[in-house]
Length: 81
Image (cartoon, rainbow, N blue to C red; front, side, top):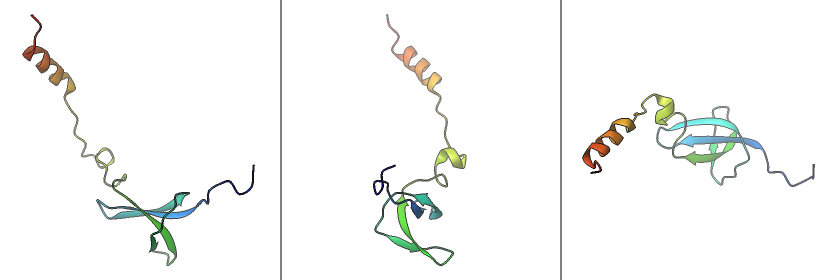
Protein backbone atom coordinates (compact mmCIF):
# COMPACT_ATOMS: atom_id res chain seq x y z
CA UNK A 1 0.00 0.00 0.00
CA UNK A 2 1.13 3.53 -0.67
CA UNK A 3 2.13 5.52 2.40
CA UNK A 4 0.33 8.73 3.44
CA UNK A 5 -2.74 8.33 1.18
CA UNK A 6 -5.13 6.77 3.68
CA UNK A 7 -7.40 8.90 5.90
CA UNK A 8 -6.86 9.07 9.64
CA UNK A 9 -8.97 6.30 11.25
CA UNK A 10 -9.71 7.39 14.83
CA UNK A 11 -12.36 7.37 17.52
CA UNK A 12 -15.25 9.78 16.94
CA UNK A 13 -18.43 10.56 18.86
CA UNK A 14 -21.67 10.68 16.83
CA UNK A 15 -24.53 12.62 18.44
CA UNK A 16 -28.15 12.22 17.35
CA UNK A 17 -29.69 15.69 17.56
CA UNK A 18 -33.30 14.48 17.58
CA UNK A 19 -32.96 12.22 20.61
CA UNK A 20 -29.80 13.54 22.34
CA UNK A 21 -28.21 10.08 22.02
CA UNK A 22 -24.45 9.77 21.49
CA UNK A 23 -22.13 6.86 20.83
CA UNK A 24 -18.39 6.42 20.43
CA UNK A 25 -17.07 4.55 17.41
CA UNK A 26 -14.21 4.67 14.94
CA UNK A 27 -14.42 6.64 11.71
CA UNK A 28 -12.43 8.60 9.14
CA UNK A 29 -14.85 11.54 9.13
CA UNK A 30 -13.40 14.92 10.06
CA UNK A 31 -14.98 17.43 12.40
CA UNK A 32 -14.11 20.78 13.94
CA UNK A 33 -16.28 20.18 17.04
CA UNK A 34 -15.04 18.19 20.01
CA UNK A 35 -16.72 16.74 23.08
CA UNK A 36 -15.50 15.35 26.37
CA UNK A 37 -16.62 11.71 26.60
CA UNK A 38 -17.50 9.60 29.66
CA UNK A 39 -13.93 8.27 29.94
CA UNK A 40 -12.55 11.81 30.34
CA UNK A 41 -10.95 11.99 26.89
CA UNK A 42 -11.84 14.54 24.25
CA UNK A 43 -13.00 13.25 20.86
CA UNK A 44 -14.19 14.84 17.59
CA UNK A 45 -17.97 15.30 17.54
CA UNK A 46 -20.17 14.63 14.50
CA UNK A 47 -23.79 15.73 14.77
CA UNK A 48 -26.35 13.67 12.84
CA UNK A 49 -30.07 14.30 12.35
CA UNK A 50 -31.13 10.68 12.72
CA UNK A 51 -29.56 7.47 13.99
CA UNK A 52 -30.65 3.98 14.95
CA UNK A 53 -31.83 5.41 18.28
CA UNK A 54 -34.43 7.68 16.65
CA UNK A 55 -35.17 6.09 13.26
CA UNK A 56 -38.73 4.68 13.07
CA UNK A 57 -37.55 1.38 11.59
CA UNK A 58 -35.30 0.63 14.57
CA UNK A 59 -37.60 2.04 17.26
CA UNK A 60 -40.61 -0.01 16.12
CA UNK A 61 -42.74 3.04 15.37
CA UNK A 62 -42.69 2.57 11.62
CA UNK A 63 -45.98 3.00 9.82
CA UNK A 64 -46.75 0.55 7.06
CA UNK A 65 -48.57 1.97 4.10
CA UNK A 66 -51.44 0.10 2.50
CA UNK A 67 -50.18 0.45 -1.06
CA UNK A 68 -52.45 -2.29 -2.39
CA UNK A 69 -55.52 -0.51 -1.08
CA UNK A 70 -54.39 2.75 -2.59
CA UNK A 71 -53.90 1.20 -6.01
CA UNK A 72 -57.35 -0.43 -5.91
CA UNK A 73 -58.93 2.84 -4.81
CA UNK A 74 -57.22 4.67 -7.66
CA UNK A 75 -58.39 2.08 -10.20
CA UNK A 76 -61.99 2.29 -8.95
CA UNK A 77 -61.98 6.07 -9.05
CA UNK A 78 -60.39 6.38 -12.49
CA UNK A 79 -61.71 3.23 -14.12
CA UNK A 80 -60.97 3.16 -17.82
CA UNK A 81 -64.07 3.11 -19.93
